[in-house]
Image (cartoon, rainbow, N blue to C red; front, side, top):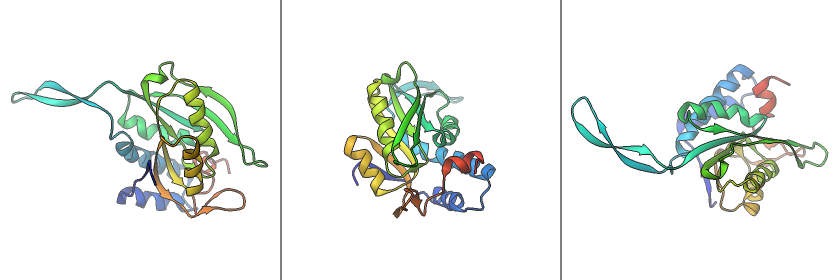
Length: 209
């Protein structure tokens, strides 16, 4: 699939199996999401531009590479997407963090926006939207629409588990958006939960169920 990047590093796949385990505690689930997000950040930020700079080692002067010209904003879709932020900030400590609040109406299965707070310079940043689960695609689709309306230009999405249905829905509205994921699962059940999935990522992160 175009603009879909499946990250299948052995360490990430191992941790995904632990995330799927229903017996994994909230404490361990949070730690695993943090670790996987940090590892994924290497791939999501692979295209950041570099410039050549002068540097002096203990031995001599030489040339090196440094990030140039494009800052990062991490925008989690609340609440589950917040669990992916800390790991990314470990690698990109200067990134700014925005928040988009969208919840799924359990009767209509449609996303409802209730909060949005973004960096004022969002138009000048690479925006990485985080959400562990890409199920129907409605929440991520709408989050990207919100970001574009507020000026964001370069947007990538980072998710742990996805479905082809969700990916297709996002790309139907935002075909240029790159989606990075650890797994493309079988599909959705009658309640629109991902199968086999992780369960409700928000509840498992915060121990609310």
